[in-house]
Length: 157
Image (tube, rainbow, N blue to C red; front, side, top):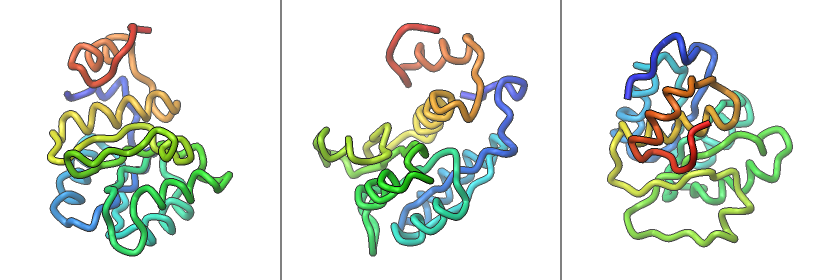
């Protein structure tokens, strides 16, 4: 989904993409860059922790299974830090990997998506997280389009 440029002002919105697989970082990063977002990439959980703390992004997209620190540990540490506790995270995980709700509640994870994933769907989910956090504004039409696509559930605003 291509959101109208008048609806989303992306230039100042920074996203950290953390994954140990270079091709995932490339594909996800390029999608956000093509929409005008600033993207910073991390190859592992420790690097992502440093980047989120120093860059204060509007969104973290992270893999679950990474070297040095996994995505769940990363998001738990970020939730415990008042400076980063409000940064929403979208967690990517291998198909069939189930995370318990009580483990997620102690993190900044707002959405979990299974790999393989559609870049379009990931972008739609990320856009909704950014809108919910107030980082971007979406028109009612854009929100309705996202809901109609199945990216989000609920009533139109």
